[in-house]
Length: 112
Image (cartoon, rainbow, N blue to C red):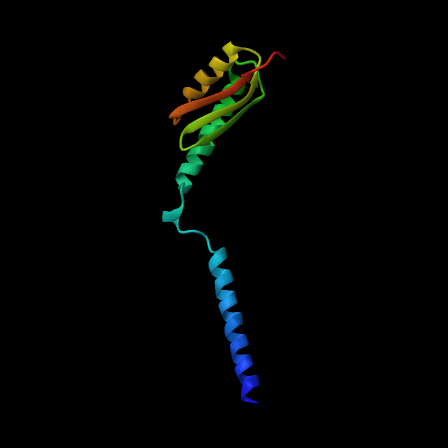
């Protein structure tokens, strides 16, 4: 009889420990441990949106195949453009966006 009671107690303790461990693993990380603050993320999103809009509006950039990503103010351009002039113009357009600290231009020149 004592063995059954002991097993029930041990099983209950194991269930509680498992539940606490599962909850601890799914909890959100502390803000201090995050590599990027929410404000920085919002700023990067705004920079990306503005850069994409400016690229589409630019008369001297002839490509809609440009992908824009921003991380901590650094904008990365990937995709393709029809000429070296378009590649340089795209970089100039993005560099002029407020909040951009630098541009990594990985655009490839391909004849369309």
